[in-house]
Amino acid sequence: MKKKDKKICVTCKRSFEWRKKWERDWENVKYCSKKCSRTYIT
Image (cartoon, rainbow, N blue to C red):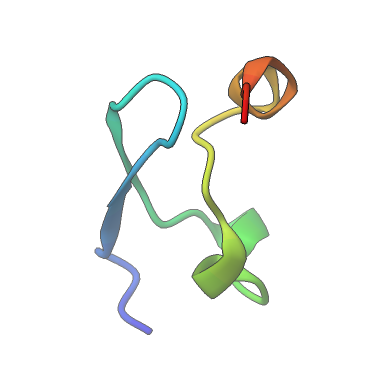
């Protein structure tokens, strides 16, 4: 996985880039922050 990859946050629809802390689980990352992951409504 490239370090310059970008994704769109499921909650706020903002783009965010790869971060070192997501290195092992980048494919499963859906949210740009903890706040967004707590406020997601299914």
